Amino acid sequence: MSNLRLPDEFWQDEEDAADDFDSDQHIYSVSQLNSDIRLILEDSFTPVWVEGEISTLRIPASGHCYFTLKDERSQVKAVLFRRQRQSLRYQPQEGDQVLCNGRISLYEPRGEYQVMVSTLELKGMGELWRAFAELKEKLEREGLFKPERKRALPELPRCLAVITSATGAAVRDILQVVRRRFAGVEIIIIPVTVQGERAAGEIVAALNCVNRYWRQRVDTVILARGGGSYEDLMPFNDEQVAYAIAACEIPLISAVGHEIDFTIADFAADVRAPTPSAAAELVIANRSELVERLHHLRRRLLQAGRHRFAGERRRLEMMALSLERGAENLAAKSEHFSELKARFRIAVASRLRLLRQNLKTCEYQLEQYSPQRRIGVLRPELERRNQRLKQFMRYHLGRNQQQLAACRDRLNAVNPLAVMARGYSLVEKVTDGSLVSRSRDLQTGEQLRLRFNAGEALCRVEEINDGDEKHEI
Image (tube, rainbow, N blue to C red):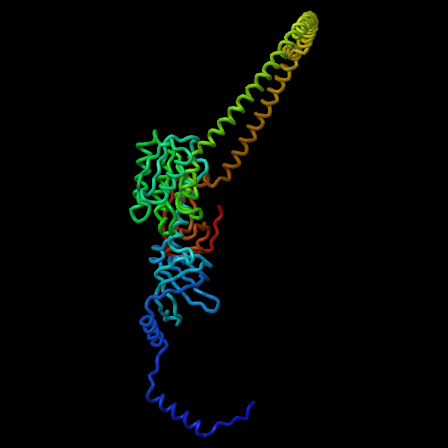
């Protein structure tokens, strides 16, 4: 402990400050203080952007979204109300790094300040990338990207339709490759806008036009544009463009952007090319390569023909030799067959004789053990026993009828209904249904039920004679 001693002037200054506080300062209640602080926060902070990581995410039944934004050193509460949450294309998830826009306010009951979020987007991916991912997942669930629906490109197309900008570098690259590799292919250029708000609609219209009117003429379709920013390529991430590509009955190559760019059109198309030039190289074969391939196929065909001819000649020689040997084998087989036929007839005749003997033996045994024969032997004994059984049953039936009549007489003697038929009745209390045998068990005014042999009656006790006289009957 320190022995520090404060001077008396210090304590005098403290007393003067306390007197000034008591006389001049306003005393806040907790609610007033929180209310004033909330107004100051809301007036001082216009809508602000806050970056942080989502943690302790909670979405109760009300639909509001409560979470905490945090970085390496601090954290702040945030709330995203149901209406704002339903209007967002991105739904918050635990651990996401996000950008929030909203206003600062204070929750007065707990004295906690929080960010009331109005918009929320995933940092690093952006709203466009989120929309791309969601659309890709939706179309993939619908089956637009399944490998089994992809069509193979024709070997030698006669007519090629190119959907692209008429003034862009993509169409020049495609024409240059086609002239260099195979100039005899017919090319139909369908100019469309490949950037901006109208681009998606024009691309869909061009695809529908090719599929409807030029389906019998065009062998392959190339949908192309040169490189650009992610926003420039957005028409090729349009949902309607994807459906139009999937509905196209002509094999389609998607060649959009540079090699590293991927769009929804690439996944929906039958084949994806990294660049427009690569698309032309995929669909147009090189003339020199075709000539060399034809020579190679001709050599293979001649070689296969010579090999097939030699093989067929060897097969014919083997067949002739087999026919000669077959004639000799046929004579031997015919003789062996005649021998087997004679042996078969002898075996069948012997088997039939044995079966007839067995049949006669079975018939004799069946006759000896016939039920009709045994019944004829036992019939007198059965008749005698039947007569004895009938006599026994008549004796016992008469005896049981006598016993039953005696029991009925004894039962009628003790039957209370028989007694009541001679004029007697039963007296019951209405309250509990108990029988009354003595007048002392009754009370004046008590209701009684009289049961007769036929019917019953209700009565009330008017007078009780509780005599001790006994009468003998």
